[in-house]
Image 1: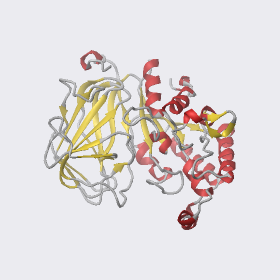
Image 2: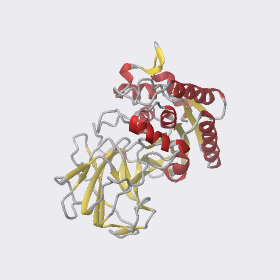
Image 3: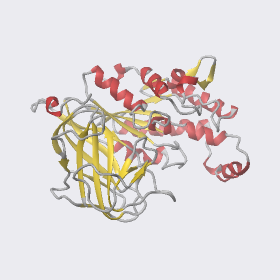
Image 4: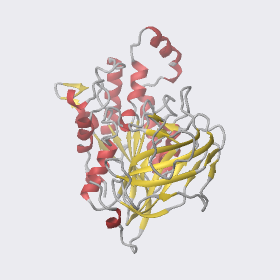
Length: 398
């Protein structure tokens, strides 16, 4: 149930900090990337932390040209998707209703003074008056983006002319949160992105971590999901590699104190898979980007060192079991075990979350429990993502 906004205002005298209450990593546009012209987009996000104000960061990170914004509006919505009366606000940029995002750059809105409930659902409407070209998008959003017919429809709900499955030009939502609030970033691939969870249900494991942290009370944590489906630590796959996007998707967010690193399954799977036919030829062409356990471990150390330079703690999560998935192989399993030994025993991480053991089938630990995967032996189900979050020691988030 949505709690009335007015009841959730924090004390005006409490010290506050900006934290990322929602985020999504973007990828370079592919040949089928969406583009828009004289259209309005409406995207609903589920926030994590609450606060006294918010601001929205848009992105044109991979745009080939500057991007014009004709209007933007936010409004809180209930579980039924209907707007909550009295919560709509027009966004401005330096006091103006319109703005232009530079090529390759983000654009931060002015802050909006409004009581933001923890775990609120918020619709962001964005009018794009010109031709955007292929979008800077987050793929596989696990929620619908509504696209209007021609015109500015930011003033309220509209009947969509189309639905796309990606987040478009949207990077993060920050809130001005009370006290010693901080941001934790979940950094990973499709498992962190939430593939396999209920569409529109906000059952990704970072969503469920936000639920646990909110229910516990105490220090406020914004949970930013920087998972990208198909992403890899070393090689560019879907999106730039983790090493490449670390600055943009993690360090650019406000007041990050903790990074949960849960990535590597795609590096392992694609490096050791026994492909046949056309897939085997593709694999041959990728040989220069294939990785082994030693390279992965070196990359983890790089991420840890770079995060520590920003005074960010890094919690390492063991790579989940994936026997039965299309790219599983005995050689890949051996690499996974070697990498997981490093994560568990090296002492390189500030803490370790054993997602491998949380998801493993006791009868066959190389496989995920049948009720914990979504049918492909790789991605979690809602129950699997719950098991992941239940394995996290919340005492580490003080």
